[in-house]
Image (cartoon, rainbow, N blue to C red; front, top):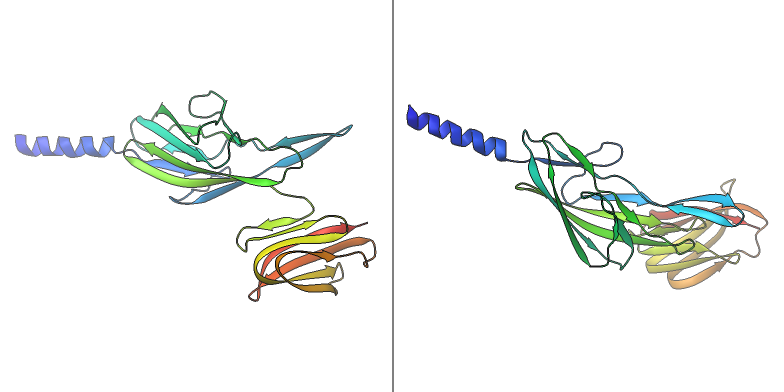
Length: 232
C-alpha cells in the first residue's frame, strides 16, 4: 500500500509540475509551435507635415495553462540592429542592441503576459523586421516568428513570390526573382497594360488617364500580388 501511495504521489507531482504554455495573438487565436504572427505599422497624419508611425502590439500573449506557477524564459533573436524595442516580461523597455536577448520571470497558474515587442520604423523607410522567439515555461518550449511590416501605401511586397511592386513617378517599379506577368486594369475591369517581368524594371503608366487603376502579378497561373495606384 505504501508503495502504491508513493507511486501515485510521484505521478501527481510530475503532472502538476508539467507546465503548459499557450501563445495567442490579439484575437485570441492560438499560435502553433513554429508558427508566424504578423503586425503592420499604422500611420496617422497629425497635420502640419507630422506623421505618427506606430507598431507597438502587446501581443502575442503567453499564458500558463498549468495548475501551478512556473519559470518563464523568453529568448529573442532579431535580424536587424536597433530595429526592435522590448518592453515585456520584465516591464523594462530596451532597444535590442544584441543579436540575442533573454528575459525571464515567474508566471503564475492561469496568468497571462504580453510579449510587448515593438518595431522602430522610420517614416518613409518601408521594410520588414523579423524576430525569432523561443519561449520556455518549465519544460514546455515553443518557437515562433514575428514579422513587423511597414508597407509602402503605393505598392505591396509579396514575400511568397519574392516580388516587390512600387508606384513612383507614374511608373510601377518591379523586382521579381522569377518570371511573372504584371497586369494593370481600370476600375471597370478592362486590361490596359500587361508586361512580362523578370528581374528589375519599370512599367510606364504615362499614357494612362488620371484615376485609380488596379494591378496584379501572376506567376505560374497564380496571382501572387495585387494592389491599386492613383495616377495623377
